[in-house]
Length: 132
Length: 155
View 1 (spheres, each protein chain N blue to C red):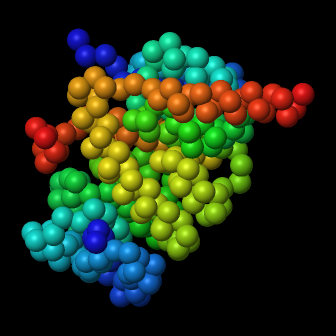
View 2 (cartoon, each protein chain N blue to C red):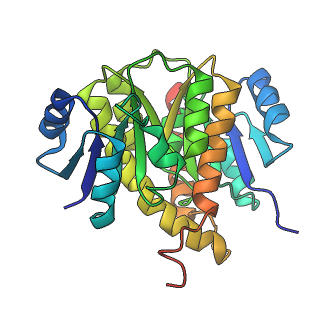
């Protein structure tokens, strides 16, 4: 039986972690941690995520620093932020590697669609690059 | 030179996008989905920027009907984009939904990120298929060093 896709949540707010866990664990193998340091520990223990949902503002290192030094090269990062989003911020975060930037409070419907979109992108083989 | 397919019935929008992307990309222009399908018979653009409201068929039908399986597709829409609409468009295959009027800085960054995502997608799919998903110890160490530096800085 194929294992579920893995999602890593990094957010210092336990309420946000719990909401995300409750909404995602049915379809995904989810790990939720409260800091970048905890994220590194779980990754080193072998939890290699396909998608990372990363809070922007955290004690210690911010989410954009994690994304910029993405420790899992093939993992796709989604940045979640309460900061006011303007075009310069979006540009900066996209250039650092975030694929999406979501504003808190975010829509769970939209977040689930984003995660599903990324996972299907990684899994669906459109044929042209298969067999190479 | 990478190609961007622009599907919009507003000639001004074509000019705006030409000004933003013309130096770095070859722009393929269509004013409706029928013209777009004609272009797609001969070209495989890396990115498609598609207006939602078009004469005849709406823009989302190009993605919904599988005409752009390899491209990163960006939907432009003039009406309010709630989370349900965005979620629906993502589920049919769009990468981004962008409300008009858009900021040139933002759409330029989205297109560049979309192209890097296409490249990443190819690598990641191969890695996943061959169980090569792993972490980068150098990046982990850089982050550990940054955490330590932060701790020292705040005492």
